[in-house]
Image 1 (spheres, rainbow, N blue to C red):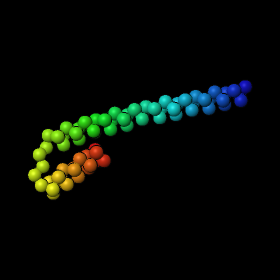
Image 2 (cartoon, helix red, strand yellow):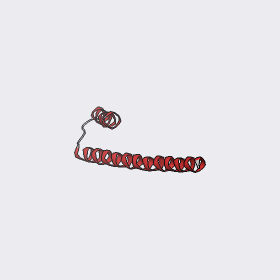
Image 3 (cartoon, rainbow, N blue to C red):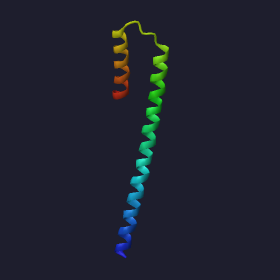
Image 4 (cartoon, rainbow, N blue to C red):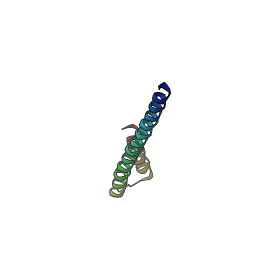
Amino acid sequence: MKYLQSIRYGLWFLQSIFIITIEVAIIIKIAERINGILKTEWIYDVKLKSWQETINFISRIIDLYNNQ
């Protein structure tokens, strides 16, 4: 009987990890999609006048993506 309980617990544990992994993957995919939309819309609407302004603008986007 203990053997069956161990197997049930093991299967439940694996199923829980699988579900959590899928949920995390979905959340990451949604976050990446939102970041992609924001970056695309920002880039298309901005008229950059110099190379330095372009570097600064891209640096701000990278910082926003990585830190916020």
